Image (cartoon, rainbow, N blue to C red; front, side, top):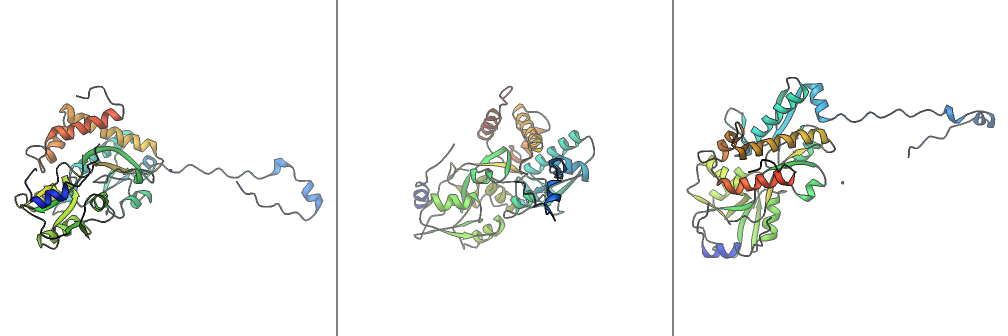
Length: 323
């Protein structure tokens, strides 16, 4: 995806500094007389009832027979809906593998219920128990990790800008569209100069504004911009810049807080997926190639992302057999 852009656009991005790499209060015992108070022995104090531990995610799934999987509708090639309403994408396939492992662990059939989530509500939907987890394109950041649990990372990308081919900055400001409350918006605001931000609810509306020339560029994760171009059949009319990306964004599943059993299950599934891709094993490599292989939905070079897969496995202690 490396293409030449105008001189002024290159100058704009040349200013970017690339960063790679959370008393039990007893009520007063009333007495009508000193005698009644003195006759009360310590052993007669009522024992507070024990509070049962909260239900874990796996316990809830076992009780209900349903796993509520949150994902996005507009984030190809990771999670999107086709015309008949069916979900598909790399993260959707990952959720399918997690569902298979849940059934294996529980030893019973479990219904997989797909729940659409939004960029603004996804964290609350997990915290409130409306979904058991969310897997799509949520970036793992220190601020977010302080408030909610994440799985291991299963993909690495970064902020880039979609512009028309041969675009040059003709004015003193660069009009860039972003989705609010995203790491992309923060990166553009802090890394680029002479930028005016325009906010859009999703990538589709941002792309429409770009097509109508209401903005000069639209910023998002590079892999999602590429997926958007593939869906819109617009790869030949637009380019994605700069290269390398302005930041590093690692995707993980959003998980319920304080549920190590479920987190371990999800992480083991991700480890098996990444290891299976590196080892060329079925069905893992087929899943990868469907979305990112040479003939896949969004073809990308293998080695950079395989290097990230190895890093994830090694950082989490899985060093044996990592090619």
